Amino acid sequence: MSADAKTQILERLHGALADHPQAPEVPRGYRHTSELSREEIVDMLEDRLVDYKANVFRETTQTVADRIATQLGASARYVIPEGLDTALLPEETAARRAIVDPNDGRKASALTVRDLNRVDAVVTSSTVSCAQTGTIFLSGRPDEGRRAITLVPDHHICIVPLDTVVELIPEAMSRVEPTAPTTMISGPSATSDIELERVEGVHGPRTLDVILLG
Image (cartoon, rainbow, N blue to C red; front, side, top):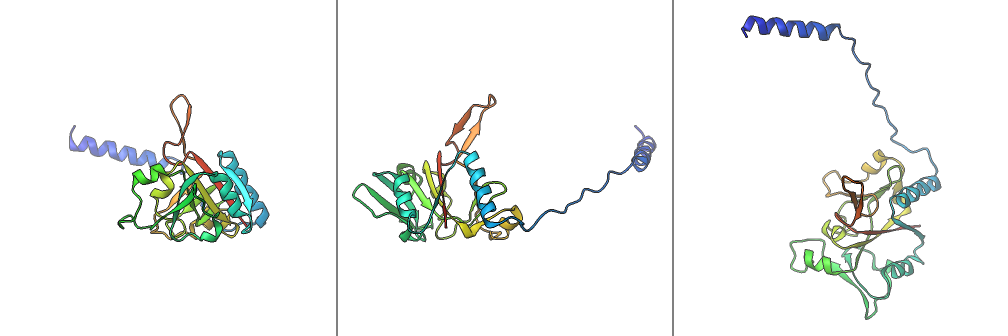
């Protein structure tokens, strides 16, 4: 094809596009601030998490340790990040004890993947939770630990303080450090094959217990 023929084709295309009606501009405005009450926001988060097959419990600082003990069972070795407030945890027994991870995978005392695979559970706090999507954000803070400790064990007990629950994604993102290694959790790990057979525990904990701490 000659250069002149190519030029003619391009001119016709440009003309056709110019004559084609332009699509209206899509409005990009969206809510940045919730108008719901605190109770409505927390109820929404609980509803979403339950729908995603997470176990949700509402506890206080006086009852949270007993709840964690119940979810762990009488005999359990569980991991906690070094910054987690131990006052929230149950008393240790000969059969149930916490293993502290130093939050720095380069340290000699850091738990390996094999170590994490041998424990029964992990207990962490969380940064913020979005009720609109039922998503819990972990950002590697001292009371949340490094990503590996919440992905390898089969059971994650996650503490969600009520003052960290927001309704909207913009509200949640404003509380997360942009450069932080963020993990977003919406229920226990689950996937489906082409025949829609649900399989749990492939990419993370099979069981997610969420404690709404007020």
